[in-house]
Length: 297
Image 1: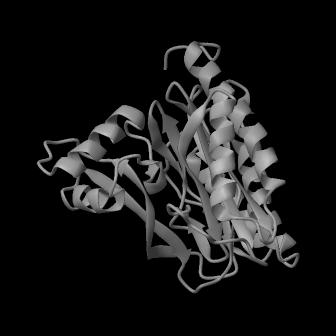
Image 2: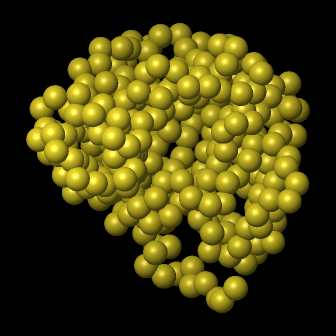
């Protein structure tokens, strides 16, 4: 592999996105309390990202109890937080260069060890990360840490690489030990994303869906669907977006039409199959010659 300039504009933008994300994450979790509005929390975080000079890399995910990912408020959502386990997942981009981080807030006061399990899995993987390390070794570190708390890793979710205007790219970072996996290289930018559960360790798709991304731009005849597609291409490119971000009228109907034509891809909420609790922790790293740099501390 040729030498990688980790001080190039690309990596500076990744770092800038990470700094913005860290600030917004800290400010947002201070506002998550029983009775607070899901929509107000999401909009606070997304607006704050913009105020600090970035843009949301994807809608703020607010996933409750057995939900693991892809929950975000619908337009006009009136849901509020109760005594629940809350997973918050944030994405920020600067000129398309991304940072991704997640944290769990326990509003029950009863599940500190479940929260610690995913967090310790994340830290164990970060400690192991570096050039020449197989991604399955990170998975083994995650699995050992989570099982050490008496929980199971969610094995059909994984961390991922971050590309330019691309939220999920290679390499995949498993949450369990796997042999013969890709090797990390200097310059890789990856999001390590452990999930811990007191259930089976697998998630499945639910019915709720408020997040989409552009899949296959093509000619669209329906006028309202075409207007929504033009807005998506101009504002979000290939990054995920929320229904509530679309400014065109009848957005949900237009998006369903676009999904039926495979123009956009929908992200249903993912939930633990047995209805058990899930915690999540995530940081973005840049692989360096002597280990890694965490951009989202």
